[in-house]
Image 1 (cartoon, rainbow, N blue to C red):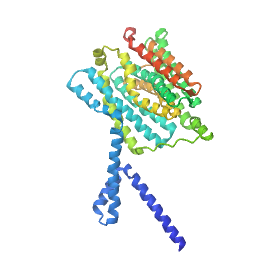
Image 2: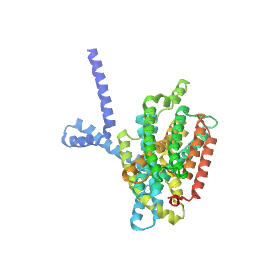
Image 3: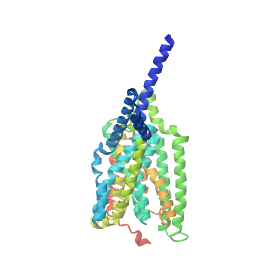
Image 4: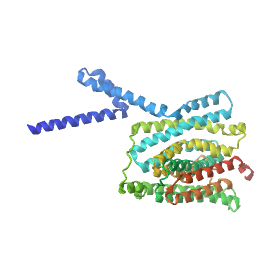
Length: 440
């Protein structure tokens, strides 16, 4: 008798548990809500209608909660209406300057929200995959803008916006993260995983190598077939770089995944209590749904943005190279910027590096070669000859950052240096005339 009593109480508790869990997770699927609705209509007994009604209310609540958290909670979302306004202006007036400006403003919160959604998704996947996801979806904006520009034959805009994205991630985003992290945690020295940082630096130098040779070949006039050899070399190098990036992903996620968790493990071994993980605000499937919706809207706005670049350059009397290298990436990197600084403030520098340097690595070793291959398929002569000025800028930047990352420590002064380096780069592009047309 005693046993059966215990068994029944055990069973009741597990049933309560199951009921609670199903109640929590039911908002994930809409089919369940439809079922709940039907059963609510057809069931007559009182004890079954109450939980179903509760489930329905809960579903409505989580849907509203999800929309509220993603679209209304963040202050940056006041810029969201500028997107539709840019589309409206495009069709009602011919003012490219305003269309470009409002498209920029409209894409900024979308890029930041993409970062937020990937961060929520990272709560379910872990740090290394989270950093990778953040970099990938953070770069979705740049990739979409690039493919639109390639379609329109604007090869220089593609090259310069991707180059600008690498420069902005490595100097501005990382600089701001090091600076804020250093100020918040002063006088403590912030540490990050040295091994992972050195591997990333090596990959960035390999990317510089791939981008450097076509430019050198062109400017020394040592091609076998003038104009064709650099294109053939670019396509070959791009395929090699894609293979290298795939190998790096395998190295990072599978074969040497333990290298990427060592800092956290060391902290735990030293007796430091690991910080409590933040609970995700939205569910995994909601995060995936928002990622899809936001990426689609970014791709729509990107089309209008690319169309207005030349007109904006003329009306503002500003070089196209400055718009492409400095303005476009600052918008495209809004997501990385926000999350890198946030993680640095929380003293999670490994994720900061995963976002900032990981993003640069991904653009240089994946997005740029990918654009060359896509251009090849489209019949556009997209190559890795970024011209001498741009290639030199990239080379020096990668060297500076590689030296900064060698020690495995960070402080506010390193941040200040990186930000000041970015100001020099921005000023250089403001006075730089892109003379690609003179060379050809």
